[in-house]
Length: 300
View 1 (cartoon, rainbow, N blue to C red):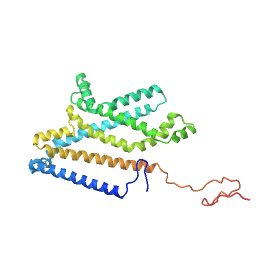
View 2: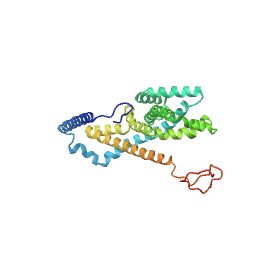
View 3: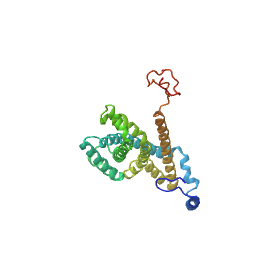
């Protein structure tokens, strides 16, 4: 029987027990879903009057599309800035200079420890009180700042862990051909680390998109805030939340799908497709035109 590092492969009785637990769990989940649907139906949440607003163009034009645009705008700006922040401080944590390494580590660990919502509220108050930006820009600026600092710190840690996960021979190979530590990091280690950490990085980008919904606390008119405005206007809270959730799920699914395609393309480009067409003789007197499939032998 094959075994893994952590536990043995389950036997017939264990597999049967796992199937039974899965069936019971599935039935309980189905029961909960049925009870929720029945409760919503008793409260007339599935009536046509509460769903008909989504068939009107004005609902999308003045509520949902505005919120969707603000969500994408805030997430896109935060993604770009977080990637820059993450790579700068991630490389800083790998620096040979102790001061740079210590300062980068302190900044990354600090902003990873502070909740995003607290940072949003803090920077919104700072920007509004000091009139750093126009009043209409303050919510967006606070959302972008908080998402950049938190997620950029996470990406910096991904960069560091991605480089450390590579075999030590990669760095040594670079040093053996005359590269410095910095050149080996930029030319050999980082390109491989980016491919290795791409799934985790994309998961973090999905987190950025979802965390823009926290901006509703500081009156940023993103998708959830606009959904709440729509629900207040049309008195259809549950249908609106379901539609908003479906939009978020669709966007995140598309982002994950694009990331999978990008990762597959990077992996294909990382492998050579060519084959050797010949080889130089390594034994004096051997023919250059020898068949590569036959071993070279020294003439007697």
